[in-house]
Length: 144
Image (cartoon, rainbow, N blue to C red; front, side, top):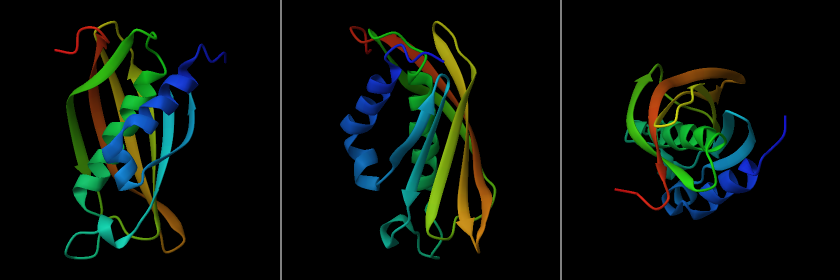
């Protein structure tokens, strides 16, 4: 598949996202309509019961979905999350999270993406969450 400039655009999304950088989410791979990220788990990512905080999982699912959608937009557009639903399927544990997001339905005004978040737990990768994210496609000039 040809790139059409989305690699540079999506890498820029990660470079400019201060909160996502502070959390530690890293871009691992991308292609037309998909994106994959990872996160090395640290004590700051855990809640009081020593499992990954739901906010960390949700942030990863949301941002990775936005990056997947970002591979399908024009240079003069951006995507903004309009809605998302996340199912937390099991506690996140282990040393690392991985998220894979895939565009289900691209559109001129809205794009729908699914995100799956996995953890490496006892040497086995297990799904910890599934999210469905709706992103508005807007002109860079009209962000409101």
